[in-house]
Image (tube, rainbow, N blue to C red; front, side, top):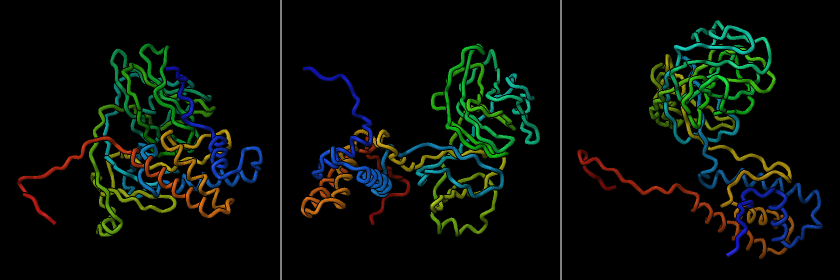
Length: 352
């Protein structure tokens, strides 16, 4: 048997999806106008926006870290976060006891002294701040960055065992770091190293109050509250170890943490539903997995037929086909774990 040996049809460009959708409604590729392309792209964005309402799409589930501030109970969530699924209060251990270094001037030790009134202020762009534990080694699992100014940094995280060869283990996108606000990042694949550093790559000059290179993660589950349950809390400013959260699902969602954090309760790890990215241009790919390509194309064909096909029977047929294809894909898009039912023999059983 002769096969191609390739797997290239995993993320086809928008042009291919649009062309196929128009073919399904009887419009061949050559007469497709710029206006028809634009209406197809608009419909594709509406499809992606609506799919989040049809159930949990596993490829949109992401992980995030929310840096907590003492005595602050409300936190605006990042752009594209639709809702939280689970959350844990995360504690970790900052690894010190070594030697800090700054490549572009400034006082490196100021970034590791727990003092918000000092900072490692470099004098040149694209520098790095590193920490040396040699001969000890640590697998850094979390990095915390607290800037001394509000600025845009493009950071990478790297480890080394000889201070010569460095291996990148993290590269968050360029983003604004607000003065005095601790921003956390998880290292996907922690690796033992004697040196660890944060390096700027976008031309900015680092001005950092504190850096945290942390290990020994401990997660404690916190529970979700409804709006009514949160509103019923008599003292919403009570401080303590956070145990619950409430997501106010506005256009820009807000997370409320209770009790209000203090002390070393500095981070919440959460999983969330991520809004799907816009389809972009004809050469961009839709942010969907291969297993949903047929459902996506079928739905696009149906939406285009509503606008451009006069045969009502065909429009209805394409709509039924689109729903069937999404149902098939949605039923496959699941976690394959056995059903577990737990009972407490001390409490007995009850039937409702």
